[in-house]
Length: 375
Image (cartoon, rainbow, N blue to C red; front, side):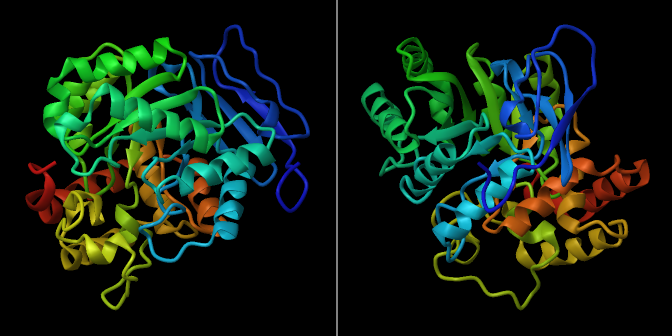
């Protein structure tokens, strides 16, 4: 049963030919399954969402998915009931992929997702992450005992026997030069604890190194209008190796919603207040590492490019979807209205060549010197 109302009706439109095992009925996306190698467009009576292949995992995932950092914490006040409403809105909108981590609220985010999966019939793919609970966060901490313990905790939190996708959570760069770490993940796959694994990275160089390991199937990387570097060499290599790409921090910590201004205040528990200079974790995680005042000026320039009737968040997400190497963008959402607005980006027509060129020009002139060679 849906959350707070009836399920939307649904139909599926095939966007390619060949054998398929796909069906839908009045329960909406609850009964939609996808075979690798084709794209479908799931049409809901309250909107629509497109699906893309997640690399070699075999999953077809909603190109606008759900990032669950905010519902765990570090984004100001969060209410579990409202978080559940946001999660249900995500599924109602056709989202079938959720990205979380064990460290988001120290299991809080994972447990909310477990509740969602108890409440809903739809097939929901969940990606989680492991490693950032290490204190200190060292290369040596990425060993078999610790990683196995983290996986067991996530299995309990998510109430599953096997995890769909586990990602190393922005480990120190030297981890990517230790094949034994990826050997641990291989053994966890063999043991039936996880189906697929990938990495979440800070730097393009880390992404390129990670995909040298043959069983790394996905890379999560910061990619948005203020962080263009991944679209260069890394996207080319990822396409060649059929790597799934999760575009994280797609709205630059809210800057690209156009709703933040110079007078905006952030709570003490919000990383946009306590991590602007990288005091707690990598500076690039907050506002994509861009100086706040510079970013606000750039946002004002972007505003003139947004078509009437389109929110800036939708515009920024549609820009990400213009890159075919991207499997999905994973904006967060603490409220149902945010989730619904984000999902509408999947319905927008392609951006014009002139808009794409203007964004690149803005990046080159204002943003590139601040971030390009750092991440």
